[in-house]
Image 1 (cartoon, rainbow over the protein chains, first blue to last red):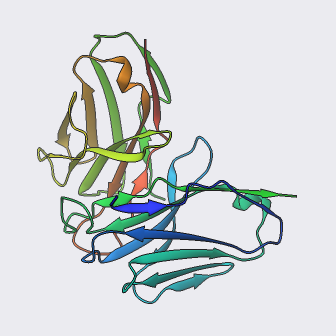
Image 2: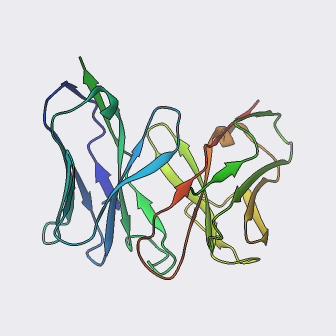
Length: 115
Length: 114
């Protein structure tokens, strides 16, 4: 089983739609979780951290389910500017431990919001 | 504002050449990382460093080496470039000692080896 798995998409949705991405991780000892956003031909940037039971930031909600080892990202009222690839990221799931902040990246889910 | 800069946005090299990719961060971060990103494979960690002169292998260190002589600078070296090293190379930095663990990325270097 891969360490961090995501549906690659693409997810093609109309403006205003609600869209949800899921991500599963294999190491039950993983402690910290994130969603990064990567625009086309740009570097990844932190979108949200998910530390405990989840958190919300405006139109974005991240949830964590430790028992099932998955995290999700919900985007409400999608905007054209939300079009990007969303990377699920986990700490503590790799070979290096979590003490140095080494992140394990999923391959990303591509979102395309259409007018 | 955290800034991570990389020496080149685009680079074209010939097979067998020695290639240096430079990364500089201005936030006094302890940790620095080199990744490569390929379609369908995602981000893969090549090497990382958590202190000056310290380095650790990542998932795919073969064919690469690194150097960290100063805290702000982390260099990736391709000793003898090969076509399968054509990729997007991303440098990142982060602080150590605990959360939030956010990594800040540079803009990337798109390397083509012919």
